[in-house]
Length: 222
Image (tube, rainbow, N blue to C red):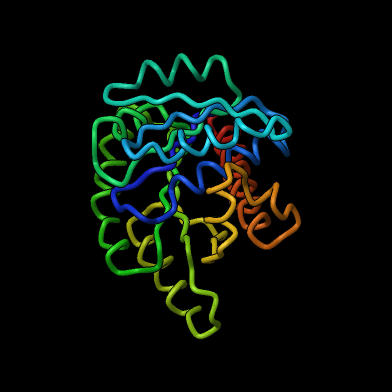
């Protein structure tokens, strides 16, 4: 499975989500996992470097890829159970090339107007890439949500706006929690810091929802 975590807006937690999903696949599914870091900021590459300093953590390989990476991803997919592609927050060649081969495109969106404004362009990109990758699944996921109860309508509104573009929106969300930043700085994940905590359950929920969708689509296509 090639999972692309990408989008046009920076700051929505793409690298954090990619890293924690990679650990979920490696730790809880005992899968072989590779992160393809396509972000010039090298966030996931730096995270892997910090992670490799602790031999007790599950091994996750990482490679940096830029530009026309379609064939690279197809080749890597032959050798790993999961290839998690971490693309930076901009429309570039690597993002579009990844969309052309990804099994699932996960687009993090904060419940903020400046993030939601990128949804029409993402829908246009996805429609174009589906011409060459018709089995691609695409989902928005609302991230870094405020935890105050009076902000619930804001989260719901963000989901409704995203869904209006005809793209699936995951039921699962993530909240703004310090554990995401703290674990990333140490090269770990929320699963290793607090495996039964709220953040770990958020990532678990996202992963399981995506896997359920993939299974349903696989059945549909036979």
